[in-house]
Image (cartoon, rainbow, N blue to C red):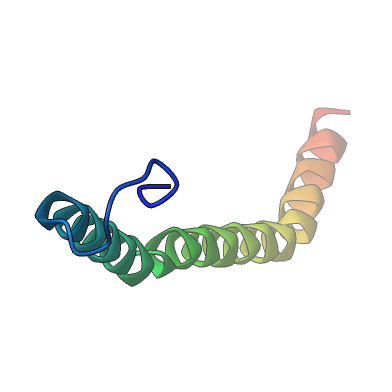
Length: 72
């Protein structure tokens, strides 16, 4: 875009802009993995909680049925 506006590639301001663009794009690329790691941890925790809660469900049902029989 800088060149389309009839500026030179060798212009010092243009070179500064190019350097800034490269620096920011490298920084953005280096932290791109962080949201995916957080998402993976969240999914793993959700699956673990779901599995553990399903294992406890039959024992809770049995206890509640026993209490219901005692009440009757």
